[in-house]
Length: 582
Ligand SMILES: Cc1cc2nc3c(=O)[nH]c(=O)nc-3n(C[C@H](O)[C@H](O)[C@H](O)COP(=O)(O)OP(=O)(O)OC[C@H]3O[C@@H](n4cnc5c(N)ncnc54)[C@H](O)[C@@H]3O)c2cc1C
Picture 1 (cartoon, rainbow, N blue to C red):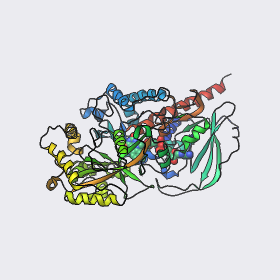
Picture 2: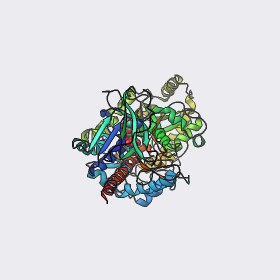
Picture 3: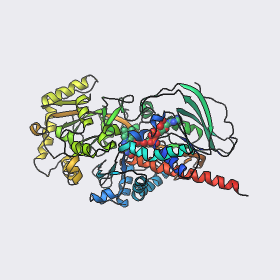
Picture 4: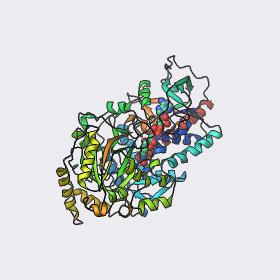
């Protein structure tokens, strides 16, 4: 159905709801804040009701918090100052104009993660696992990228629980008539009053009803049109990670090299299509830092996909040996779990879009965590028994990891190196990859293994492994005892895992001020228009700068969604007060 083109009708009444475009986490948090203040709210989403919560439902639920109760219990000494330095060392903001609001958001977010995030979500009923994970362990420099200490707080119940604690009160407010949902409503245009320049509503198409389960790509057949007016409009429509053409078009060739990778697996559902970025831009919103994205370098093809080209990210710990497509070991400090963007840059320089992990049963069992709520049924279903038997005391890894080893296309499992390299070559032969030379691979592995006779070493990866094991939760359940990979009797079988590039997060987006109000290109605010969550670069149009410290996306949606909800409520209630003034 063609997009309607007539100019917007003017609303007849001032008593209009706040309109939220996108019922993902950012939209839900904003709706929660609005409903707490009894502000009438209308949530629109292009997907069906099954998809409430958007990407956050699929997430592992990791949250970046600073100096939390869990960190203190683990003996981790963290502080606002350390986190701030880590954030700015990773973000490397370098754009005077575009980074004006992102810098302010970064400072505000680190303060929020230190002072409020933990209590804000715990007050809603969210719990954290007792041990704190260490993501993005850094590039080896105190002033460079990465977390100096563990800060990745896994929520007890993962993504579905993060969604639930905000969705439940919003659904309660729906019963009271404060909130209304309209699913299968896809917004095509933001309506702007020509005289005042104010956002006054949205126009779009009603999509045919669908009963497909959550995450499944849905039809775009339209059965009607709509035009809706609001007292304010919030865009919380997510990023571009499900739209491979948009990812390729925004690829930063100046930083990552001239060749845009051909093949990706896709880490987000198809609804993460990025359309609202262009729609908002054509309405007059300023979209900035489009070239900043956060894609992973450890993607597996899902043997049991839900959405098209569904990929699963491995959250690796440091022990696997990482080889590029030609069989060369990745240079320091590009070790598993250390520096995502640095690794991506290196991979792009090879001219190939995949790499290899050389690993073994002992390492896989301990160190392969898979991202995604459905890949972590023990934590998602809050089963302490499963968690302890599989992760802490088990020797095979979680059941989803075992399934990937068994059914995953990217895995080669063999008892000896000869067969392993043969299997690797057979695997890449089908996709036009490089055949590896057995002797060269053996030499790389034996050189690495030669650094594991002592607890000290000149090899930076060996140092990293030993360092990680001084953090006791890592030693107990996350980082395998250091050993030689060719010691297959004790730690075998040997495994090679082809790691693909996996699209995920959009770091740039709609520029916003600290109240989540949208900015225009001339530096003025766009009256009546707000943006939050991934579409706003998680705040400001790019709170992360170039790199993330992980667990910062859900937190960014919560923080920017909260700011938007509170500011819109202030505006709407303030306007109501004003209208009663003489
Ligand atoms: C597998 C996975 C694991 C993750 N793990 C973590 C983690 O551990 N920690 C972390 O911090 N982050 C994690 N993330 C990232 C995080 O979940 C997302 O960045 C975040 O949930 C984005 O929320 P959002 O509300 O901004 O957007 P979304 O969740 O994308 O929601 C946007 C909604 O807007 C709707 N929409 C879009 N366009 C339109 C339109 N034109 N009209 C109507 N509706 C529209 C969409 O249908 C969607 O429902 C993970 C993500 C995935 C997929």
